[in-house]
Image (cartoon, rainbow, N blue to C red; front, side, top):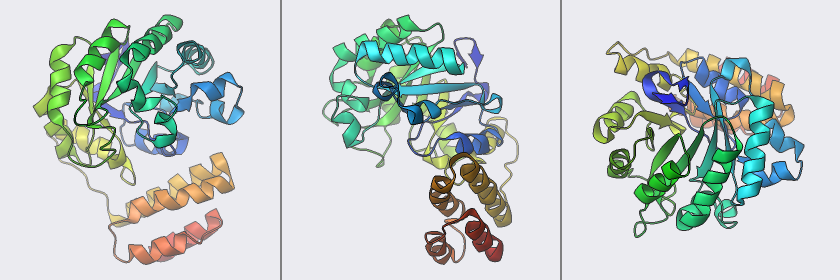
Length: 316
């Protein structure tokens, strides 16, 4: 699959997840084979008003390429301004427009999945961004606002007409949030309705889920989100399954060693805030292990990287 001139090998993409898909997380996934990644969402309005912390979310290292930067907002001119600024400063492979975030503080401003209820405005946003940059623009959608307004096909057609190079469809509605089930038929309907590449998203927690989505929808690529939390190996698993090769499942010790590497990178990037964020990531790595509840309780009290490492080394 290609987005513009960028090849996405095996059609596998790491999803944008707010507060999760940062540099450290992306590197862990990249090292396990993630061919293409999308940043956590970046506020166009915050960029417009010169927020330095927001700009830091957009930094891309050579190891992370090819990678897209995702922006959110509802004002066409400000979205275009943000897209142009990011494309010139950070050299992303694409700009992704968020029309899928269901969080209240985002949708209450008419942004994220709220744009699924205002397709004329969504059209203006997509066209404005596509006209502003020289790189591909992609759009991440949900199936609709709720079960009575499933309009992903209409939104995808609008995105294509407005200049999008690809669309990603999360097979859940806004009101559904992240609850099961994922509606694969919506992704299939979008794939049959448009000519640009379609990326399927939702509910992929193992290689079998990815193969099912490819088979049932005909999508060009799949996007992995929470299935990668604590399990960056999911990318190598999907690749192996697609190539009909044996899947390597790490030993428990390898999970813990990976958690330590991940925590190291988080603290190097973010200092004490990285310590706080490392707690949740480490908890994901060890969630199914014996005695993990006790270890998580200990981690929640850790105030330094050394404490986290000591807890994990003792557990090993």
